[in-house]
Image (spheres, rainbow, N blue to C red):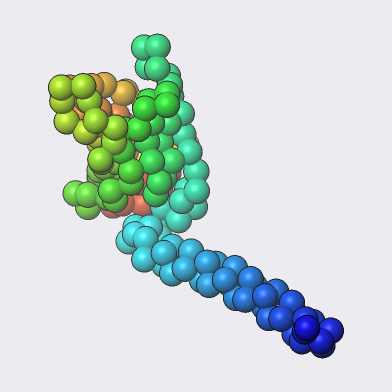
Length: 146
């Protein structure tokens, strides 16, 4: 039979192991975030945890930065990063289309006064396209480009 002291030590050890696991998970999250691309001047960091919605036809589209894109409950893909010098964001590997490819969404990033998801289309089967306006994109242009 275990002594009371040994039981207390085991209990404390379990508590400390739980705290260690929590800290390791927190550290992994920090490491994961450190590896994300937030832009040349880190201009996209401010919207890293944000989601944006827009209605088109009978559907509600939602993009969650650095995470996923959906059409109602259908996955249009997971974050696949910036492309073409930060002018495009891609979400890939979404739900498979019936008789088609896995769904994907390509966002054309443009300078705007506020974040706005708009102009959603489906140019080819299960390959969606939209525009995303954000003040963060305005920093990508020199004053001669505006």
